Length: 270
Image (cartoon, rainbow, N blue to C red; front, side, top):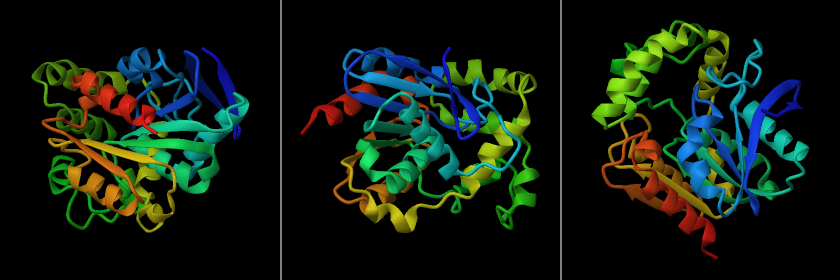
């Protein structure tokens, strides 16, 4: 797979199809291949760019040891666009990728044609009580560097997978695999991503976003609760909010047909 050296990091990426550029930014820990349902559908109409974020546990982009920020990862995406000669693109971010997409459009508004924020949030400070309890975090968890480094990453990933899917089949397959898989990867990248997510907060800057925006979330999302998408849509000027009935946090895999249709319809409309 090709790599581009951006901000001193070798970024793993792949390009599919032709047409207007559409950059897909994946969520926490996951590699670019996790977009397989979307890549197959979108490449028929767009030049689709998928990328491994820095630190992605199962990706092939570098995992530097220095601290990460969401802005750093947004800068990585812009640097990759520069390397590929892409001046402006549609940006689709899922979960953590949606946080990166927010930071990207706020800092580089001229580089974004349309913005899709899927199953994401502007800040994790008001962490859902169900997730806090599942992760074993006390009410006094302060998101300090010391607190964050005390999190059991293997447990956190297992919890996120369990909360992320409604489908019993997905949970049966993925929940047992995650702890085994994590033993095979470097944890420093995952910790870097966790620290970046913990430090994010776009709430007071969302009003500056001018790109046409679709905010989409499943009504049964237990990780990035639908309330967070409501907040995003209310603060981003003229944003369109779509709630997928019964959709989980992982509905881009469980309900790809519905998700892909909403995205394509939004991109095609004037």
